[in-house]
Length: 403
Length: 165
Image 1 (tube, each protein chain N blue to C red):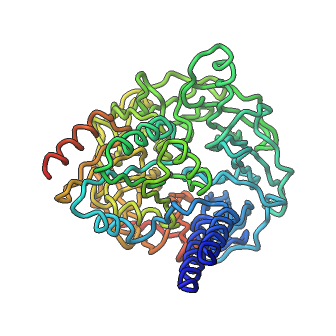
Image 2 (cartoon, chains in turn blue, orange; image 1 turned 135 degrees about the horizontal axis):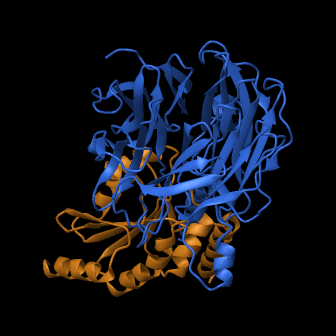
């Protein structure tokens, strides 16, 4: 009787211990492994150099590394580690390291780390001027030490590197004045020396959503254009576009559409923007608003002032997510992820008439475990899907040039 | 006497082991198949499943209200699932549940690197926005509330469920 009682208690303690041990382990990882190698990466971002070399920056094992490929992603050079120690890299769903490669082969990078457990971030940048063999010491993109995250980089024709990010510095004066402060602010800074140093940060817009990626490109030389999730009146987190009148002067804000998504939370699901050589803006985004829910596409033929009626993307029953758009040599391409209960696929559609009509969506890649966002990258001749997957590693897939 | 001593010793060992591991024994891993198990496990009873997360602002406001609702409505099975878009640490999750008066409800935390699959099993249309509340009737009909739930709506639903007994 006594023995039974004891055994039962011991068994209970052991069972509970096992369950607890399971919960104390780190959360089931999104990474295939924990080393800094590409195979272990959770986020990988591509850029083509002027000579057709594919450059890839990735985060894995708490480090950021860069490597290049001369054979369209089939093999990569020995990686160069950008970080010298394991950092608390921003692992939010919409965070990733950024890369631009200029005409001289200079490589500018930026990425975020977490400063603390409250998800306050710091944007760090660096540059390589020796073809990716080495990178300069990491520096913060601004001296302000509140919080910066969700940086984006874009390269102007003259080699100027333009950076934009979400910055929470304005919550300090708001708090001191007893005012409520929601979200963050869109900040920017330009570098005239290829990303070696950046000008002082300036504000483009206050009261933006704080945790969605930005879409950033150039509308014309000297004129960056950015799409972001703004906070409109009543806490409505819909998308907006700002086109700069010059590198230091943000233009007016224009709303992409009235989705009417009132949410006092972080959707962690940002938009994408590309501008065709003829000046058409193509945008894709996710919303869960009162007016519409899901992924949508729209275009603007008046420099981002007004947008076409939102076109829904994907099959609603398959959780369409993470849309990306790129105007490339063969047409404007959109990709997004869908999930069928077992596999995540990347769906692709292409428009050859500047966004008026789109081909039926087609599966161009799939995987059976977790994956990074699907990205598009162009070398001026072809557009490629760039996709990091846990089960199958990194993939670069040419978008087939067919109707 | 010896029996009592053994029990106490066992109990002390149990508490010590739980304490040493630093997590609450109440928090269960939410994995593949857990959603169907929850539905089956509560079949025939009204169930309120609340999806929330430590980093979600409105969840912090809603959670204590839900704690009070659970206390006031013992006939409704309240289940919580920490389903943040960024992984939550079990310690922080449990602390918020305790503070909200939800220590004794059935509490889960997402525990799968392939979160798309977990969400798809629950609702293929769900992209992970929280808070989110799913009300499951005795007959198994699911009503989904996106965003913060109005407690008056929960009261109304609960009253309807109880009147069906």
